[in-house]
Amino acid sequence: MDAASRERLLQDVEAFCREIRPIDELCYVEHRFNDQVLPLARKYNLLGIPVPVEYGGRGADAVTYAQALARIGQEGTGVRTFFSGHTSIGEAPIMYWGTPEQKRRFLPAACRGEIILAFGLTEPEAGSNPLEMQMTYQRRGDRFILNGVKYLISNGGIADVIVTFAKGPNGRISAFLVETGKPGFVKEDLLAKCGMPTSNTAMFELTDYEVPVENLLGEEGNGFRIAMHTLITGRLSVAAGCLGVIVDCLNEAVAYAKERRQHGKEIARHQLVQEHIAGIEMDRVTTEALVMKAAAVKDASDAEPSNAQLKQQAEILAAQAKLHASNAAWDAADRAVQVFGGRGWSTLYRPGRHLVDVRVCRIYEGTDEILKLKVAAAVLGKEFEAYR
Ligand SMILES: Cc1cc2nc3c(=O)[nH]c(=O)nc-3n(C[C@H](O)[C@H](O)[C@H](O)COP(=O)(O)OP(=O)(O)OC[C@H]3O[C@@H](n4cnc5c(N)ncnc54)[C@H](O)[C@@H]3O)c2cc1C
Image (cartoon, rainbow, N blue to C red; front, side, top):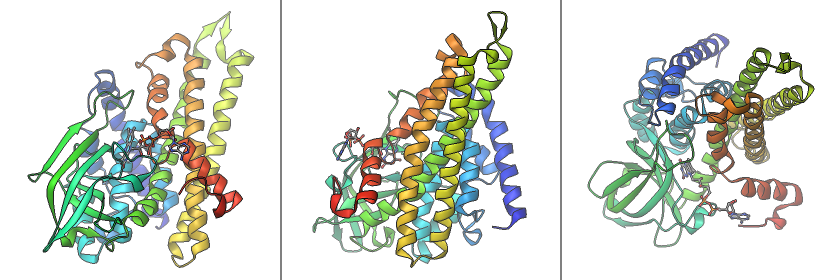
C-alpha cells in the first residue's frame, strides 16, 4: 500500500471513530445493539480494509490494518469486534482460500456493505477443540446438506454469509460459504452477555440446509487448515483492538488524574496513582511493539507464501500478540477504573465499559490457556504439544 493511500485510509478511520463515539456511548448506556456501525463504516469505505483493491477493498497490508484496528479499538471492543467478524475472519478466508469466482461474488459486495460476514466454528460442545464439532455435511448431487448448531458467533445474527465449518462422512472438516436466511436456517441473538451490548453475538442452527457445491471454500476436507489459518488474522485483529483499548484507558486515566483533586492536589501528583499510569503506559509500549512485530512478520509471510518457517513464525507471533495484548488491556482497564475511583465502576465512563468488554478477548479466538500451550509447544518442540 502506498503512503498516500495509507494516510487517506487512516484519516477515514479517524473520521469514522469520531462519529461513532457518541452513538456507541448512547447505545451502550441504553444497552442496545449499535446499528450505526455498518452505515458509518460504509460511508468511510472501511468494510474491506485489507481486501485487495481489485475486489473493492483498500488493499492495506497487515501493519496498516493493525494500526486501523488499534484506532477503532479505542472506541470499544464491541465496535472493533464487528470489524474482526466481518473482515479479519469473514473476508480473510475468502481472500486466501476462495476461487476467483467466489472472490468476485462475495468480496466486492462485502466491501460495499451489501452483505455482512461472520465466521462459524464454535459449537455448544466444541470450543477450544473444534475437532469435536458435531455439525455434519453430506453431498447430495450438486449440493451439500448441513445439519448442526454454531454458538457464540460474532455478527451471527446480522450476517448474510457465514464461513461455516462442518464434518463430512469421512470425519474430515470442510468449510462452506453459508448464505443465511433460507428455509432451514434459524438464528438467535445471545443477549445475556457480560459486556459488548452494542455488538451482535448469536447462535444459529442449520437443518437439512442446502449449500450449493460452488460455495465449498477451499478443497473438501481442508476446513480445519482454513480455520487455523484464519485464526492468524483473527488473533492479530483482537491484539490490535486491545492495543486501542489500552491507549484509550491511558488517555482517560491521564486526563482524569490531572483534573480530579483529593487531599489538596490533583490525584496525578500522588505516587500510587502514578504507579497506575506507569503500568498502563508499560502495557501500551509492550503491546504496541509485539502487535506491530506480529503484523510485520505476517506481511513478510504473505509476500513469501512458500516459506513455511516464516508462516510458522507469523502464526506463533499472532498467538503471542493476542495473549499478551488481551491480558495487558485487561490490566490497563482495571488500572484506569482504579484511577477513576467510584466513577470507574460505572458504565457511564469509558474505563468501566472497557473493563467489562475487553475481558472477552482472553476467551475468543483462543483462550489464554490454549494460547499458552501453543507458545510452550513452540518453545519445547512439537513432541511436547499438550493437546492435539
Ligand atoms: C463474545 C464472543 C464472541 C465469539 N465470536 C466467535 C466467532 O465469531 N466465531 C466462532 O467460531 N467462535 C466465537 N466465539 C467462541 C470462542 O472462540 C470460544 O468461546 C472459545 O474458543 C472457548 O471455547 P468454549 O467457550 O467452548 O470454552 P471451552 O473450550 O469449554 O473451555 C473452557 C475452559 O477450559 C479451558 N481448556 C479447554 N481445553 C483445555 C486444554 N486442553 N488445556 C487447558 N485448558 C483447557 C479453556 O481455556 C477455558 O478456560 C466467541 C465467544 C464469545 C464469548
